[in-house]
Length: 250
Image (cartoon, rainbow, N blue to C red; front, side, top):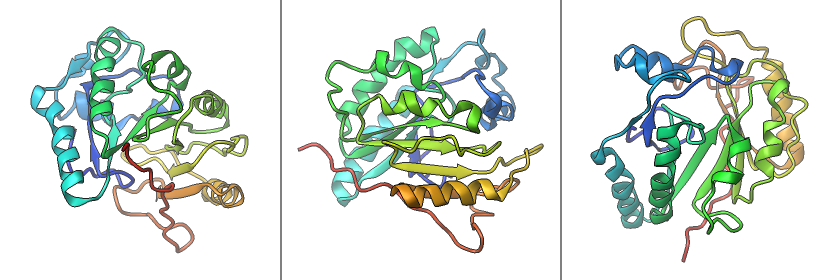
């Protein structure tokens, strides 16, 4: 929802709606659920029977403002969608609002939209007819917390996209079964916050080595138990790479 996002690998965050439901172990300590139920005081927005709240008109205007700024400054702006929802959730409000989101993305060609989901199997059937080989300003990603969910990458690589990325966060186990074919970027992060689940740093070392071999960009976000912009080093080094620059439409 916010400008100047605290999420290290993006610039801004945008939420078309608020609310989600859990689908795998990586969701167990969901920061978004804690925020929405706690600080925002909206427990009814979470879970399979919960409602979803479309964000305000003023919020929907922000990407248009960011796009104008990107044009003015001559620098593309990365936008993560969404930190408080899953843009591919199969839910009535989500399904009804997704076309509006895609229209907004289509019109903001100087933003690089980072669309992350734990439901990559739904992407193919929910893309617009003009998707073609992928819109130049959209990066498609999926979250994979351990080998049990490595097959999500198979769903992702079936979709034409200028950038495909994996969010290995929270890292809950090794990911040596992940096929990096067709993947351009891997983000690694240990779980943060109260009750965080421990990691084995060898998981990060191993996926970094595999990314190096495959020519895949690697971004080490943080070690387990650390908060934003702390614990960012991996064996004394900061490794925060991005995929190649994506050019906007002519």
